[in-house]
Length: 202
Image (tube, rainbow, N blue to C red; front, side, top):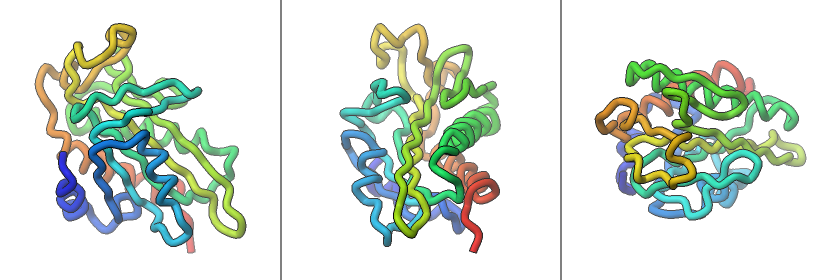
């Protein structure tokens, strides 16, 4: 996907919280870090930053996350949920379940959640979630929800260490997946379910 994909994706989304602003980067250290850099008081909730490549992608417990260039969906969302910082695992579970449900509905591929933050297909990891929260004085807490989905990886796109434990949607389906279409479906589902569970009521 290119920078112009941001406008195309935004145009295909309904009025939304998640996806009201979309930024596409060719490369970044991590999409979570890129969102934090843009997280000012004036930044709208629902900003989404995608990257084609992460040079320092992160998973839970400071594990690294391999982000093969142009093969997956690597993105982070700026949120201001109506929860306390100690409830951040709720966000991780919500995001992981929504990814799993989108895979099942859009691709007819059985997917499950391995709590707290992994999405599993064929007993191997296809996606992961990383949630980071920061307290804000006199304002809703900030939450950055990072999501990584292995979409069109071939086995050789994974390191030897991960090859037996990781999988992509393309490997499971034996065909490529349209990343643009899957991104739209996933953002729609994330927005719908977030609004129901976490959005602030005014």
